[in-house]
Length: 90
Image (cartoon, rainbow, N blue to C red):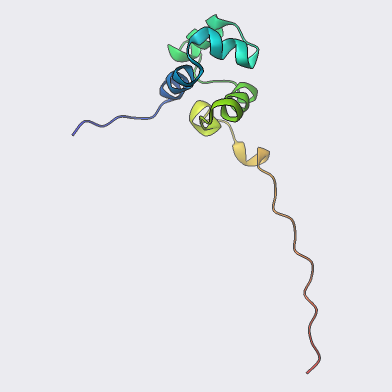
């Protein structure tokens, strides 16, 4: 059985497939095609967080796959604190 490791480069390849081409992906997120090429070929370790968020929003490719070393917990909305419950008198 062959194992396939998920890497940022694999996630970029998936985003390119979803967009249709490196150029279309670059245009959709406001970057140059050479930036996408760098991400695909590992010249940049991973996608910058702001771009990863755009790709996730547009194509559904997880930002965590595109930029796994970024601390995404700081970007997660915190759950609202529920109001205190009122105790009933016995």
